[in-house]
Length: 631
Ligand SMILES: Nc1ncnc2c1ncn2[C@@H]1O[C@H](COP(=O)(O)OP(=O)(O)OP(=O)(O)O)[C@@H](O)[C@H]1O
Ligand SMILES: [Mg+2]
Image (tube, rainbow, N blue to C red; front, side, top):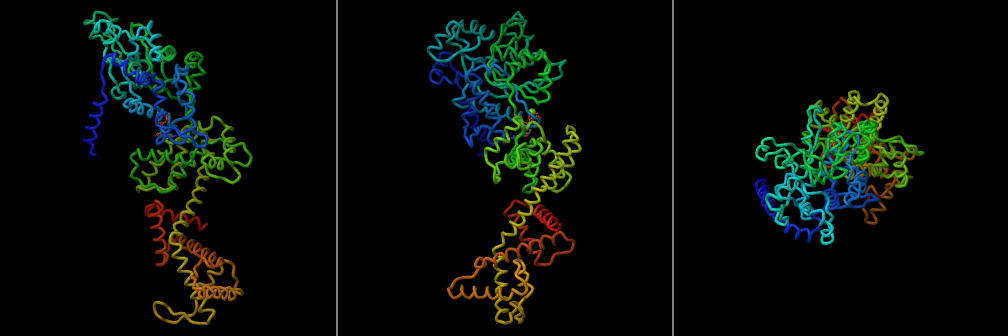
């Protein structure tokens, strides 16, 4: 579908979803679908649940975060079970500010942004629908129209509890525009949108001297005072602060702990009593989720200050640690690269994996458990099976340090280093060694690393490098094995022809020139030596092979390289020894001969076609493995 069509569809959908009616009509709606009248917290919780929840190995996975947040299942489950779930049930936690605390670049802002975007979508669905008093700048809950003395009977009839009082503005409008007839007051369906400032607000502290409380609670509109005659006429007030605009939904407080105290007091009353003071009006009721985020240092400073005690007790702190699973870390990088201007760069297989191994290692505490070092722990956390260890061991390791993951190398640092490596290399291709080198070089520039950590981290680079060496060697072997069956067959036939000629004391005929020649002793020995057949034993070995061969022939069976175990082993070993030579040659300055060149090209082609390399990175890999084999 073209983008213009999509825009058109969106607009049509928008019109279809619109609804407007009287308060009486609205009551009909909530009679049928009481969930429409839910609180902000409950709406968020239901949104999270409605995306689907799955349980894997006793761990709840919320699909809502599925393709965006990686490796934080436990932290997210805790966030939902300890905050959103009880808050949705109107328990007291709802009256606390939710403070996500975690190390830099650990995904806090991303989580909040997901919640915001999620709510925007959710309010467009049936179960997430929100209705408000029409024309109210705060999208006030229509149920506030029900006078306090009638709320008990309302509860009896509708089963819905109403919190909060009608705002000064709507109290006045009810009198002036509707003559007090509540049932006629207009109600409309609203759709959250951060851009249009409906139901979603964001507050960032600016310069403390110039920061105005009006940013939060709105301000007098001086141009209309003359019209309405008084500053205390609510119509002369603009209810357009972030707290007003975020009513019914959520409000993000960036850098909350950096904020001036007087601002924080507004939050205190808002969270605790569900209302806040604006201008010269009675308290204004608001129902919104307040989410803030901070790092650990800032948080410690904040609670160390006695003056913040009252506020502190009204905050629920939820830790958002770094991901500790290497495979998930790799996905984080993949996502960040996709979202960046590096998306066109070829990243060789395993380049991100080694970076992930390194980052996770820097985040892990040294295990106390016998026989487990930090590398093994990294593997176990990553879900790799290691003989002698199981789930119970992993749980034990986790219990050793319940607050693990609050420090170490952050994803943004890794991505920055990768991009600087790309710039330096001048080819749009980068491999694991480039990445490790860039990470290592960067450690000197990383301001917040202590000397002790630097040493430790350098060591982890070496660990990641060793991991890579193993992976690289296996990778080249695998690529070689791709044409393995073919090569094995050729080599075997060649060997058998020679053995036959040797045992029968015949000559062989060169297939090209037709010339007669002696059996190729060098070739036969090069294979037999692989399995330790000595010069003295070679004749017996060759005769045994020949007997087996004719036995097969008599039964009409094909003799292939699986037909004789020791011979198979010899052929395999010979092929890998050849590989070693071939790869070694690529690193030497001398030009490889034709056959070797052919082999190299085959392996490169396999690496490109089957294993995700490009020619540059495949050749780099071969050269590197060659140098490893030369050591
Ligand atoms: N566990 C994770 N899953 C997916 N992406 C992650 C994760 N952790 C970090 N990221 C990515 O790292 C980048 C930084 O994350 P984000 O800005 O959300 O961190 P933050 O905790 O808000 O950091 P800061 O404290 O610096 O504000 C983002 O691109 C984010 O997508
Ligand atoms: Mg952030």
